[in-house]
Length: 383
Ligand code: NDP
Ligand code: GDR
Image (tube, rainbow, N blue to C red; front, top):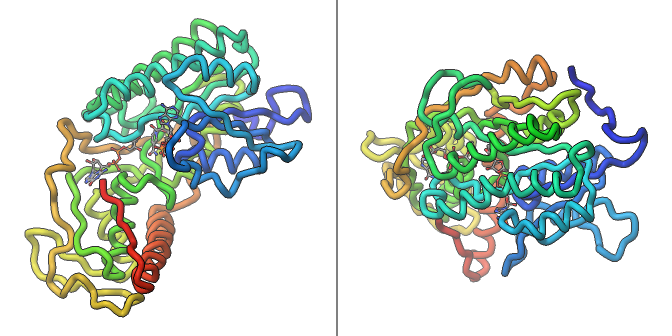
């Protein structure tokens, strides 16, 4: 049963949350949600040679202010000492472990680091809870993933579907999943896994496929880019909106008993369909490699330049560089358990998600176009 909104600590005491991965997509939405709910929110960020807080800058509070509700700490999931120090200092009621090397393709290139951060990282936090004797106080959320299902065993995938991870990322997350279950059973810690299917937003990392597509479509439409290179376009995914999904992360920590939940929309589309939806949003007609003629039009000439693409040009091509050694072909979640027990249903449709992402990237592309028009160089980052 949901006891939504009920404090787990003393009545009226402001709850304290600690978010790892606060600078990431989900971390930023979750921090915003918890601040709205009146929490004191602590976040762990990594040291970086450049500022890495773009997604949370709107939540920034001057460190010299008193009564701050949003506080950042330097730490790293690969560094136990930093985690123990922060958890000791913060004494959180809730920990959301969102930090991870979260890119599946990159995990094939950095498998050991991914195992360390994504697998052992969860263990380090759970051990810190135990070392600091916070087992009864601190609730723990682990960002588990539909990638655990990997090679298809059952469609749709639910909590009881067997796992078959297909990447170093998914194998590391499998360890984190089970160590979370084990610490719940062994030490009575309120610890749970959210098995989240893909979720996206305008602040999604630019190298994940949805954001790569919406950025490219916006740039093609404005004549800033001539082609979009993708890998496996037949992969099927169940895409939701990150804003909806972080609400569920919070709900999972407000129950009487810790339990693991699948969170998904229950609808799947192919990567190729996502490209088509994004293009339709700006009225761009696409031609895919190996296919017949189709019109490709520039939407708006901010620069006054001619569009890079002419009618009939191929603008979506396959580059095998983006294929993975082992692929996850199809993911479709069955969220009925979360609907029944958490009363949770996603509010934002895929059409709304695509629209929000495309319009946001179109605005950024327009800025780049204006910079270019003023004679400055506008760099496009490539992966
Ligand atoms: P992001 O990649 O956007 O964010 C990851 C965050 O983790 C960033 O803040 C990053 O810091 C931080 N981080 C990475 N490595 C370390 C480390 N060693 N120590 C401390 N912090 C670190 O991911 P999302 O927000 O999309 O996802 C959040 C979590 O949910 C991840 O664990 C992901 O694996 C999982 N997940 C995501 C899904 C999705 O579709 N988005 C679906 C299912 C699970 P920095 O900003 O400095 O890079
Ligand atoms: P995924 O997301 O691997 O599902 O992991 P991603 O967007 O990277 O890939 C989705 C599918 O698209 C195919 N694809 C491409 N992917 C990328 N990144 N770039 C391309 O050019 C491209 N072309 C085709 C992929 O092969 C794949 O099939 C995400 C991450 O957020 C994980 O952290 C999270 O656990 C899972 O979602 C659920």
